[in-house]
Image (cartoon, rainbow, N blue to C red; front, side, top):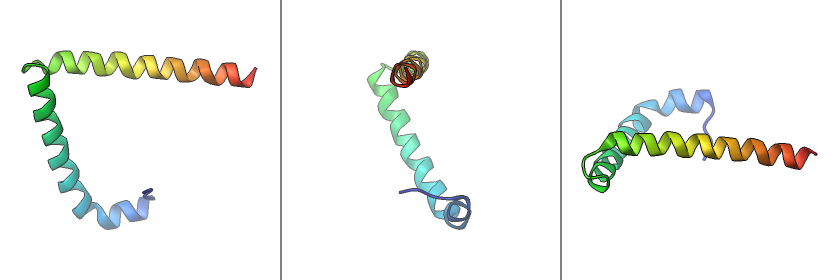
Length: 65
């Protein structure tokens, strides 16, 4: 579901608490999974994000050739 700026501002009071609760649940799961070491999770997330971005830019260059 896509939200434009008006939708987001109109429904923000309902979206934000749900987003926050779900994010907290995710952090608890990640903390448990990584044995309490959220720094390791963050490092892996940064590496993964940069790797995906690099792969996406490589794929775009390949497709445009």
